[in-house]
Length: 226
Image (cartoon, rainbow, N blue to C red; front, side):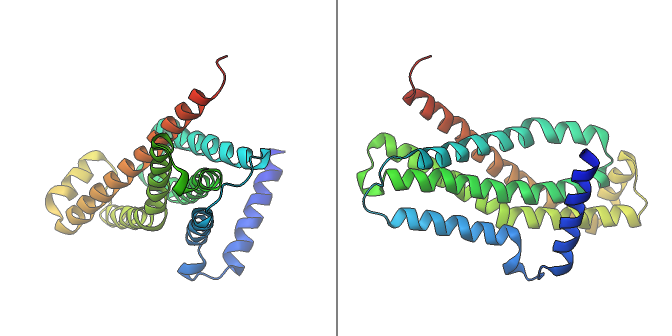
């Protein structure tokens, strides 16, 4: 069963690579980012709250549950586990694919949380408590958009530039990498840029994840005590 699913996924990926235009404005991360902003913009333009419904509640809970789940997995579990099993270059390849899907998904989920909140609570009706949550959800969406559109492509390109230099210089061990850092100005520049933007991306991801914790606590406070 697992092998059949993998074959289906590989077929879909191959068809996508062969038929989907490669223009940057048709890339899935860009399309999801535009869709997310469009949905939130529509919700923001509403001046009257929509009636409460199970559909709105479901989408809101899907946004927070999905956002918390994938961010917790990527932040606390995946990276540490995979890094121990793969080489530097293998890990880089895996991360380049995973991070694209992760940040695009985070953008969609963040827009669900914020958009449904705005539909039920237009900005003009916000209390202090609603303002705190609304601003937090907006920051989460901004952090996801920043990573998806800017930081992730930049970090990925720098990571592959660094790996290419390591490959050409036959740097396979930590000692070889330290030698490159010491003796190769180009490698040192690329590595410093990678470290800078990767750190910014990590902080942005932690902000997104932290807001998911806050959102869960906010919802728990509104629920009946078990």
